[in-house]
Length: 75
Image 1: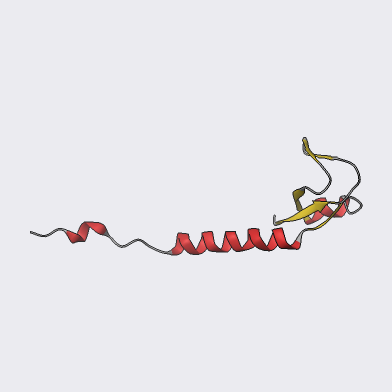
Image 2 (image 1 turned 60 degrees about the vertical axis):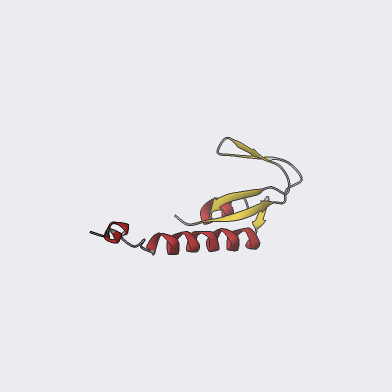
């Protein structure tokens, strides 16, 4: 399930899954979780975009194959 980052905008702390979040902190939520907390959070588009770019770069790095270094032996 895809998650996005939201910023806590409530004037009070939020306890979610046993973790306490203070006003202004980012919290990673699914769309369903965010719908249930709409009075307390708003989408943090910058953080969500940054994390998506990190994930994309990580996947691209995993796809690159390192050359076989055992073929450099000279006889």
